[in-house]
Image 1 (cartoon, helix red, strand yellow):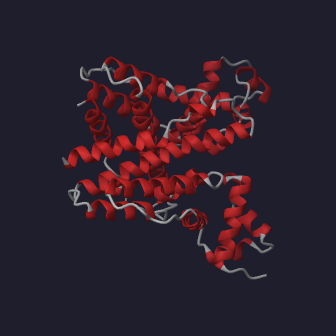
Image 2 (cartoon, rainbow over the protein chains, first blue to last red; image 1 turned 120 degrees about the vertical axis):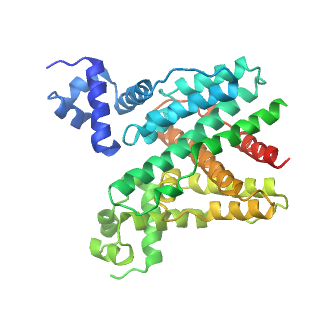
Image 3 (cartoon, rainbow over the protein chains, first blue to last red; image 1 turned 135 degrees about the vertical axis):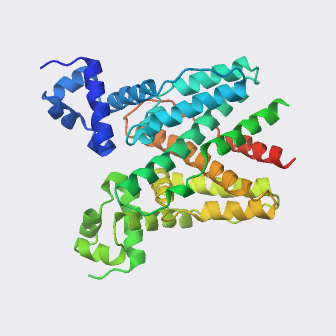
Length: 183
Length: 183
């Protein structure tokens, strides 16, 4: 049975969401689609390429309308969308941060933040620093929140979820640092 | 053969460093120590407890002397030590961030930053926000750097390591945000 690339990606996201990152293998994905692993490799050269497509699909599914006019709020919109997109899929933070580290995808939030910063006339040398500091903060925060929630749900740990740090307060601290540079 | 708890931890760190997080199982650790898995469970109730001990050992091995007098430099010392400790062991960032998320260990850097911030008379409500924003930034940055370096070394991806963002510049942005709140 032949499958379109988009079908394979949709099944990969479903497999990830249901069983977690450790279960997302080319072999298992082939078995669930009732095809040989070679049929998966027809669409994706390797596991990394599959993960990249999965990460971009996770981000695409989390897309929200843009409403903000000022750069601090525009950055908040991008960071909040990224956070919620990752949290919406099991191990989403791990997958998106990994693909970003591979340099193979998940670049849309950083590209958009770089445009917001450039349009706000942030000094050129500060643009990559600020966009990457923000994305690292979002990844670090989402990884803690998702890892904690998933482990508690599985009964693996007993941590109180009320102690999770507030996302917006930390984000504002980074944005204030950027604002101080522009003053 | 009986093993002390510290021996088991040392072997677990070596196993992690040589073969990565996926290889660190109670079964494999028992096999390498030539004991039944039950001998490992004698020291650690479960995999999460073992990981917590491994994370704390990774941090302990990375300990550096403290030299700074001012709070921004004191925060930089803690964050830099945390970063280098995690980078010194394969998958160290993943393990330390996971254990922190579990609430089972790896708390020393946050505890120390909270003391630095309190001593600097940072407003009480800002102390947890600042310490957690800093630790999330460090985790996010170290995860990208380590994931990228390991994947390139294994030949899994071809990303240029020169494009890794500068750690200190991003850290300064967060510290500037904190400084702006104190002004």
